[in-house]
Length: 394
Ligand code: PLP
Image (cartoon, rainbow, N blue to C red; front, side):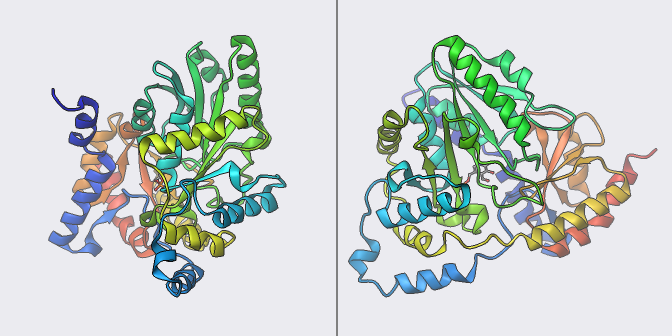
């Protein structure tokens, strides 16, 4: 092939989440939106805070050349300062603006972190089930994506299994808590155990193993602690996005943080900048960098997710479905009623229910039910879930 085969393959094979969402949109046009229960996409159903609109309105009063001009590649100093100050207030850290690189969402910050760290032939461990784009981002960085199943009972990190997967090629472990797709939040003890393993293995192998903590759902947690990972493991890079916390997924704004406590900080900061440069991921959207200056401390409104979570878990439990009690994010991880999650999904589809089969996340036998939808969708879907359940009882 005269073009890049890997890129062709990624473009030609669609993400199954997006395919289901496209099917949902077409089906809604056919039979009416209220008759289709689309739980596929992680698009927040909560509006962005009013403060975001106010900030945009204020930005529009700036001279156009200032408003629309390039910013530094890593972002406006005032925006990075605002983010650093916010983290310092919340986590008692002492980060500076130069520890941050502003990005087009978490997708770009993860890609930058991976490209800053990895050389051809390196391995990056992910905890399955996992956000499917991780595999794409890891392969793009020239590394191999090594899947390690989470503990099948608790969906916490199976630290012994991670140990079994570590080799002399392991460059990093990537975690995501609160977790997409499971809705679990890794407990402090679990993260401490992982940190201890990575410290020991880094010593034994004579080379550092990094931790990439992808945290777009940090603020969406239901009465559980979400520990600040760099406090537990110093060789951490944090990837963040305002897609979920401020409901701004289409605006593409987030950051990569190299904590100043990371022993390789002075190497990693230029490597992050270089990764951004290499990929053309420079100068995140200027308007939303300005929004961060005003809105970085806006609280995340999780009330709607709390209400949806309650209605969904109570309704499904009453019918008899088994699922992992969600502690964070806005996804419910539910056991399929047959071993083949794709077959279960096809049956669900015939009842106009659209969850995502778990094979997309590197794990058989489950579905992800995204509850960042309207409350009416959750309540309205219950008869369909009941009918799906009944169809399995002979
Ligand atoms: N990481 C996880 C776990 C996600 O669920 C998502 C988006 O759904 C991303 C990263 C990408 O986020 P962004 O839209 O900010 O690029």
